[in-house]
Amino acid sequence: MDATDILDRLPYELAARLECDPFFVDIPVIVAEAGNIRLEMERKQAAITEKNNKRGVAVIVLQLVADDYSKNLQFGPMIIYPAFQVVENVELNHDDFGTGKSHRKVARKIRDIIKNGNLMGLVQDMKAGKPCIEPTDLTELGELLKGCQVNFECLEVSTEQQTQVQMPIFTGITTNGVPQVLLTSATAGASIWYTIDDSYPNNGTADTFPGSTAQLYNGAINIPAGGFTVRAGAYMDGAIASGINRAQINF
Image 1 (cartoon, rainbow, N blue to C red):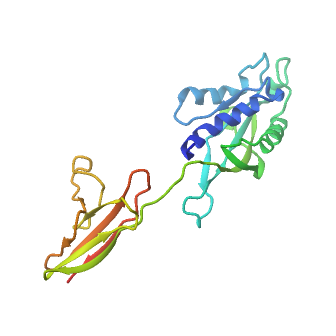
Image 2 (cartoon, one colour; image 1 turned 120 degrees about the vertical axis):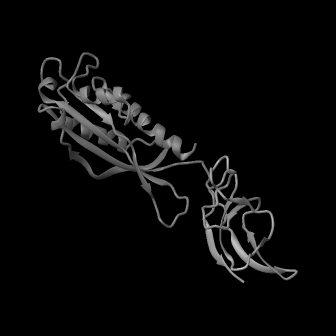
Image 3 (tube, rainbow, N blue to C red; image 1 turned 90 degrees about the vertical axis):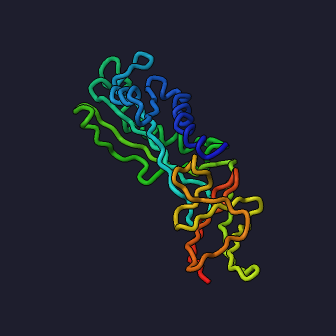
């Protein structure tokens, strides 16, 4: 499973985990998705949505926030920050059809369930965030709504192996009195694309990148009088492209 699949699936996995617990038998759990109008409307109405003839409190699984785990690891795991928003309509939650479970009590239960629930193959080292539970201002949704946010952090688990092509290097030579430059990459099988007008060396044809002057390297490049600025990148299917090398070549 690649990292993108994990980020897509995790909110739904977390929602399912809560819904499997008897405590949430009468509490709606909604996964929020930005840009989805229907879900956003559900979010605003969540606290009055009935579930098993009860109403008054709901949980929204928020969109994931992720960050680089370590600047020293080229392809290390992402650290993920799952979060849940608990919304309570205090008046409805304490009438004859209310759950009677306050947003603070629901938040504490989320902490207990998620912190101690491993999702093997998706994430690891799930732990409470700092702060774990914090108040949320819901006045925009109505004066009777109260809420809080429950925060966690964990590391992704990915079976996707990332590799990067090695950046091309430039070597000056002279062949039959003609100055030339060689482009090489330490990654076997990589193709090298280059430009000599200081533009970006895209790995494609003019049809793919209109206006591109990039050329596929297939042998030593003659250096004209006055020299030129050469830029080159190395590419290979299934790997991240190399960095772009650049040099002013003269003779």
